[in-house]
Image (cartoon, rainbow, N blue to C red):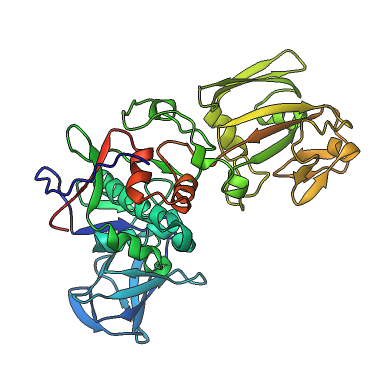
Length: 428
């Protein structure tokens, strides 16, 4: 078991904001029409210097036509003199919002909608602890509460620290997992809320200067953690590159995946002829930082490991065992019409829900694009990989495994975040 250091004290140099404003761009990237409905509490709707009271089930819409913006309520259409609408409450209010034809998403707290170019900007202001209740179940899962509750508590502390470090000078952060950490509001609240409540106010700080550390975490580190300078170039003493026994053999296809692609398609993807050789340069973790491609015409090209993964990453499609999920991988080359079962872990290739073996292998385009009608002539490259994400900091599947083995959330956090301690703000 790990030696724990859990300190409860007030840090005068650390500002814990009670409220946070979240810019909603993940589920509302370019909204032009919006519908808002009150689900709980009494709200005040402000627009055009008017103020109206809204109760449960009352709703309104905002939209635009040409150069005008308007609000529609109770079958009345009003032009907005200023393209801004505020919906606020003094209660523990809940509202929901959607674009036409899309699903409702519920949020706690207040709402501001303003115009930016041709689209609306949406801001949700709420208590920072309520914000975390809409983060933890998306970054992990409410379903983990039964066996992985300590992992949920670790995620709550990490997410709270992340919020503190990444809120801008205006007290804002985004809901986008591509920019910050994922947030989906009241819609996803569940068992994970208890993990937030039981760690209220707790954050991770540096063991020496007692300032909040920069937080990184990913779904699965493939059994080997990574250092920050191997991902973002900047060294951070709170992270190390070392084996992670807790992230092996758990997580299904994110623990072990395989991507296959025809040699000619691989070459075409990078402006080359069919590829005859792939050379990989790796860090000590096994993560690839450079891929060198040599084709049959004598040309070659080198790309970063990240660029190589992004070329084949399954954007806007479901993740599966035959997805290219990260930089921790190795490659094998298979000649057409020959299947070497020693090189294939399962003895076959999974291709768009089909199994490609023997002569069928020569018809492979890629794991993303399935089979072609006619055989291809230059063989197939198979990339066997582990993990999903950058591998820095907490491995969420590793944390879940630690929880199932009886480790506390403090032990989980101090295992993944080096030279750190946990503090609690007494105001929380």
